[in-house]
Length: 81
Image (tube, rainbow, N blue to C red; front, side, top):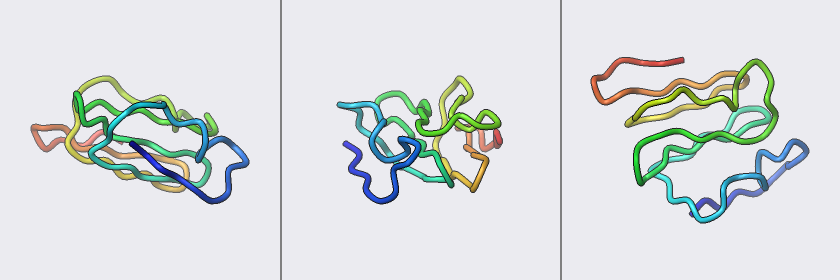
């Protein structure tokens, strides 16, 4: 389960899905994303600006969030940003 703390003006700390397990988490300026342990999909929460909380469909093996962007690595080693 994810445990987040700190500045939470936009729900980037408190609005994450309850009961999920993650391989990894990464936080941007006003959003947080998690790589789900169960199926390798990405879920994001916080401020929806410029599409940062709209995760692409599919399975991923790695995830990084930037200030106002995210990138994830697919199993075939191609990147989606």
